[in-house]
Image (tube, rainbow, N blue to C red):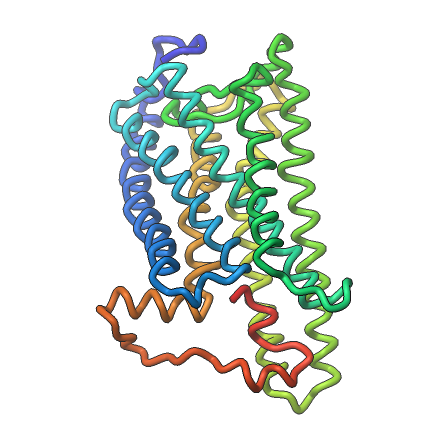
Length: 334
């Protein structure tokens, strides 16, 4: 251990021992599930040309972000949890902290790009806008640039990565002011640009999208397609918002509390559980953004089941949807 950690390792007390024993199987289960599902997403896209659409580039970016989280975050955390403390030193902490932060930020900004795309396509603030490959590439590049502006500064002297919680994983230093590293300014910057603003954008875009779909449904009461579209988009909006809050709100709340009340005593579990929830976004994203996508789901089942979909689902035809103002394919990320 380092960064001034005492020899009285909190992992060795009764609370820490119980928690570390619980955390090991959780991390192992998360890694065992998240890696194959996200890798399968990439593999399915390579195998099926029809999936290589501009919007799906953003969904694939989510899968890449989740793999960052699994490879650079979960595996290191599992190894250090088995050891009982972070034994990889400053360099290992920087690597783990960077990968975990980068993965989480790529996923977060991908959701922002996805929300903006859905808002523009469905609500049509710009007439005749079509989301094409160039827009998708710009969107993906934007997510990486924004992620680097959060994950890179701690490696360059603005704040730092330190072991957090039960000292088995690393994160931004919320715990000390450290004026020489500018911790206070970095935490304020990160909470403003990399948490609050994305939350406002996502909430605004999906709020407007939901209102648009409801308005269209009210004008087309006889349209079964539109009614189905309203139900689908409502479900997607609810799941998206809840997953975002479940993943990041506990971590952000506890981190801000620690930052605002530096010097207050708190146990190792207080930060460990929220950190695990934040990193477990790698579990939620494949379910929400890939497995709930009919086209991806059918292609995955076909590959997993050796070329045959056991449920016999056919791709929904888009011919009839062209006559509708808003269709299920327009309001769901497919």
